[in-house]
Amino acid sequence: QKEVEQDPGPLSVPEGAIVSLNCTYSNSAFQYFMWYRQYSRKGPELLMYTYSSGNKEDGRFTAQVDKSSKYISLFIRDSQPSDSATYLCAMSANSGYSTLTFGKGTMLLVSP
Amino acid sequence: GAGVSQSPSNKVTEKGKDVELRCDPISGHTALYWYRQSLGQGLEFLIYFQGNSAPDKSGLPSDRFSAERTGGSVSTLTIQRTQQEDSAVYLCASSLSGDISGNTIYFGEGSWLTVV
Figure 1 (cartoon, each protein chain N blue to C red):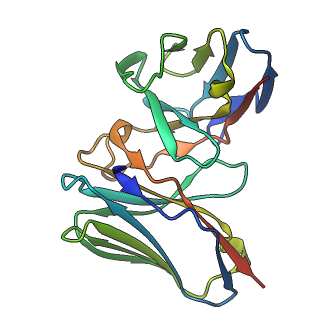
Figure 2: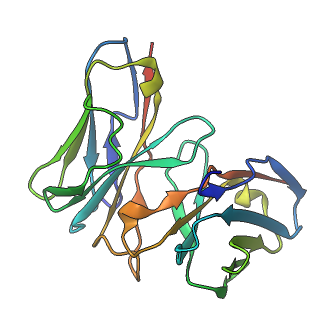
C-alpha cells in the first residue's frame, strides 16, 4: 500500500459545480497537509496548508483533514474553467519540506 | 528574478550522455530542493540543500545522480550516463527556510528531460 493514495481522474465537471478532491494515507504520523495546483507544463503552486485536523477555508477553497480516517479533502465551490489543472495532495510527519510525500495528483477539467 | 528559474526548459539527449540541469532560486531563499516528476507519478524528492550543504540527499536514485549548490544560490543537478528511465520533469523549488510552518515553497517550471 502506497503511503498516499489519490485518484488520478480525470474528473470532469460543468462550470459552477462543487468539486471534491480527496487523498487517503496510511502513515498516522502525518500532521502537515497541503494541496498544490499544477497547470500543464508548470510547477506546482501551494493552494492550502493545514496543520493537524480540522477545516480551513480560503475563498472558494476549503481543505478538510480527518486524521481518524486518514483522509483529506479539498472542496472547490463555484468551479471555473480556470480551475482546470492537476491537484496534488502532500503531507509530512514533521516540519521539513524535504520530507513531504506527494500523491500522484487528480486531473480536474471544468467545462464552460 | 521574481521566481525560481530553471534551464534548459527542454532537453533531449542520447542514452549514455551526461546532462546538467540548472536552477536559480528566489533571491534570499536558503533552502533549495530538487524533485522528479515522471508521467502519471507524483513528485519524487531527490535532494535538499540548506545553504550550500545537502543535509538530505536520500532521494537520489543512484550514484549517476549528483547535485551541488554554490554561493548559497545556483544549483546544478547532474545525471551521468543517462538512461531512458531518467526521462522525466525535473523540478527545482526554493523556500526561505526548510521549515513548512508559515513558509511557502516555490517551484520552477521544470526541465523536461527526454532520453532517447
